[in-house]
Length: 152
Image (tube, rainbow, N blue to C red):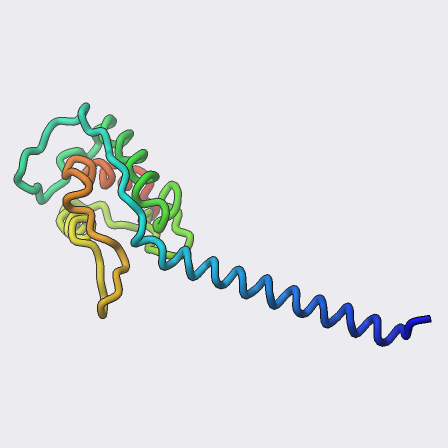
């Protein structure tokens, strides 16, 4: 007959090892996801149904309240931004919650600079630049959609 105390100790040791392994795996996965945001290939956005904006960058969103732009922007956001900013702009903690983004027209240029040039601090890339990957029309459509999901 086996000793009850030895069996109980072995079970507790095994349980502790399994918990430690599960925690290590979860941390490794989380770190990988947080680091991987820079490795995502931006998805093309079909903006053919929107008015063309030309080569000069706008300072104010020309698509504000444009229903077609809002439709396109929601899809473009979920394809290109949701990995970090969360589906529906509900942040999962990796990047800022864009439902709190200020929608005043005077903040449009700030938004455009961030999406065009990305965000880096001390050599670390927090958001990759999207200029050259997304058209100006797609960027403004995303902003038009974000304004519809804003929380006060």
